[in-house]
Image 1 (tube, one colour):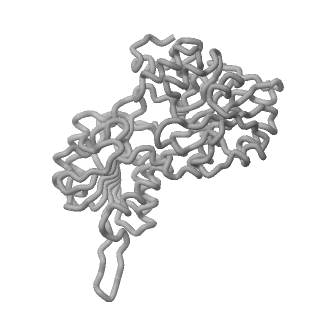
Image 2 (cartoon, rainbow, N blue to C red):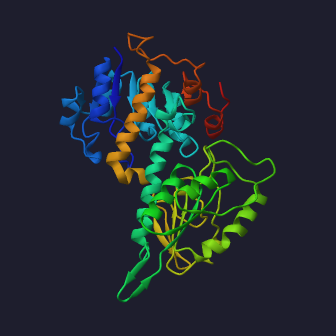
Image 3 (tube, rainbow, N blue to C red):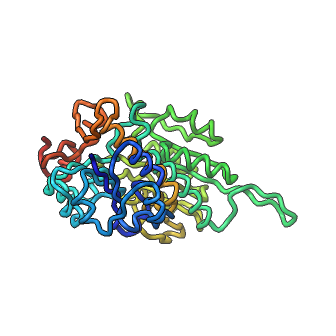
Length: 385
């Protein structure tokens, strides 16, 4: 019988949990044995008794859980200390993000642990249920607007009052991926005037369907790409984009940036010179701050004021909506486990890593003491297997 271990997150500020009583119940029903570390779900409002009532066994510490398990379920990448406690040959299902923390990825490699990296799940129809980047980005886009509304010293909606008319806030959103679309929808629901820009001109209809205005920028020659992932734009495109959005940013009360390139530093879309043109008291929420920032003067983990503009660099926004972030992430992970152990083909419930499978082959970044993912190998300055 395969044993799953749901670990308590140890990184500062990580409130999410890789399983919920709902998904634990599903694992138990399939025949897995499930161990849950004490307090694993507390920050997401799940008690140990909720997990035990679903059939899990509560384990007091991380080391004990790892020693008994075949698969470790986490949200954040393993720390160096955690990797050292994992059983050789076991499988870790979590985010990896080696470029942000090469030391932790190297520790997983040295421990002989395989890592299914949740950020590497391909965005295909078959893998849609496993796409944690999308489920968490959706929450981040929503929360970014709420934070902006709280930090901005004015209303979002148009108001007609006895004391006079209050004009609606103007919001500019960079990036029309999952986070950007949710930010557009949320800002419109709050009554703001919303404009958005993206390197992909084909998203114009999506922006307009949500009530926003698309700021059009002439794309690079041959630059149209059907991929839903962000990519690095050319320097010439960035100049055209800056010129096109400059007037909108200067009038904006709120700017939300969402552009991130997997495995690379985030592109700078709002340079300091552009910040200087903004209204006194305006707000920028930088969702890419952990990857270097779309604004070159935002600071990770801080809210600072520069040139009269409030720069919000709050990290891990999904973790600030811990209940639903955990529910969605836990379901993503459950579908990953279901894919790794298909019932009809594997009644013994053993994890089998078929690297010919497009999802497994793309998402297992580290396996058997070797690196299988080129950007991870680059971050660790190693060659791929």
